[in-house]
Length: 415
Image (cartoon, rainbow, N blue to C red; front, side, top):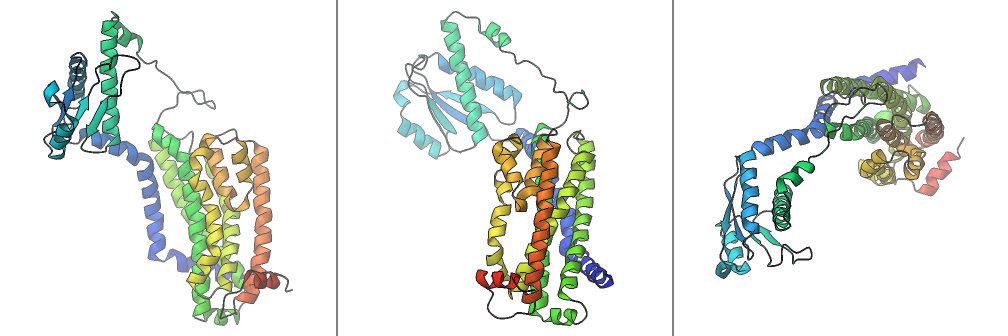
């Protein structure tokens, strides 16, 4: 045991003293905070951005929709004085798409809108809209203003009071309650939606990133023959155990720092109902076996390879599996109780990431699923450590061509 502790302390200190580790401690929380709250900041900044006057040419054979559209533009200009539009009505003789396209290309116009003669009919021809850019938000705003203009003219022709209709269409207000406390839920909605992803991403980086560092360390020590010196003082089992234990404590440091930053951010932005002690506790409970599982796999692969390039090809299947929760995180967080979500929870390499998504998205995740997935995960850890120990004991002193799958299976049979 003292030798295992000595190796663990060495691995821990060698890792936490590196510049990369310090940057990961500081930068990762900053990146996650920026990802969660940056969307709102960018949206507010875009609303205040100064944009040159954008002129729209409008062709309206009916003569009825263009004035209503101009009224919508005027209302928009009052709400956003830094991003104004201007409407330029075009006569029928000049209402040629080729001419208007040429004027738009030369930047004389921002774009043009061509209404059909039967635009007010429910089955009328499409409205032609062309712009000099492809900004999605601007396009949605223009389409919304055009639709409101057509709707207003249709109401006028049907002799319906447009002001009364607008009043009746006033959206209802909502108060969202927290089921646990019965108090109104406040805070950034975007942050609430992305919080499960933040939990999963930090758990993924803390688990996979550090475990991959263990892989690199094993390969470097093997290629430089340092491992031969180490094995003269400790056994292969003690060496592997010490490395894994040392990296576990490195992971604890990261989780502690990131968890503290997350808890403080939750208090600042009224998200304590999501980032609470229960979820942080489960994050730690899933981090430990999840890290041990990946660390055992990395140590086994690293001991069987002589170069990082060889290890990358062998670890590719594991990497491919672990990114599944990253690809489908939105579905998993939106449907935490679905059959797909439950099934993926029992796939050991991705169990920690899927379960932390589900727990953050659904506070009523059944306890039996949490206990059973932890049981499956710990059982997988025992199997992985046993297999990695067999491979590590044989492969750490093997050089030359990397072993094939058949050779790895043969190594597992050695006593």
